[in-house]
Image (cartoon, rainbow, N blue to C red; front, side, top):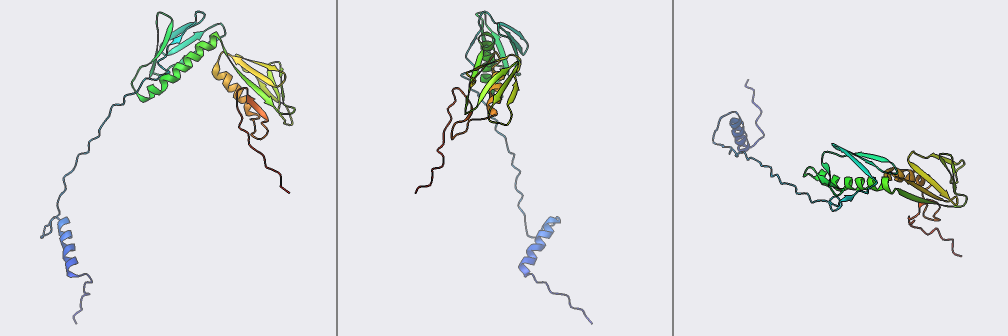
Length: 233
């Protein structure tokens, strides 16, 4: 008894195409040709980045007669009547001193990072020169009933409405003066340290926008909000 094979469910045209594909992949070509596409070489276009010189970075830094500058490689030390500061420049920045006593901060490389560092390190260098010769100060003001500040030795004590007074140790190189128990003046020769300590004082009680209570900078403008209005009868 002959056993009948199961007929294929695919139409003859699809079977012929499938056989042609199969034969093509096996290395045979029976009437069906597959076109070979040429390989394209993709080139990368490199464009030179031209960085503009910083308007802040190209400004000269005048050095007073009472300030001594020492430069060793990328390390700069500035000494004046108020103190001594030092800074380490990155490799993208170089510093030059002219015979007239003026300092110029220049770019050592023509890269985007060098352009970003140019103005920053010029400002940091100028802050060092001004700090050791004249100094900086930051003023704060306490606003609120019962808010007051006082000095106890080398500590600044703040009463800001907590259950206990806040005691803060004054860092070296920083002087703090309290006037009328509500006005605080932070001064010194390091501008970064002055700003950090003043921000730490303000952080204990930032000014709130409804009544303006808190610790704020003397020149700070607090944007006020209108409170909820009472129910109209």
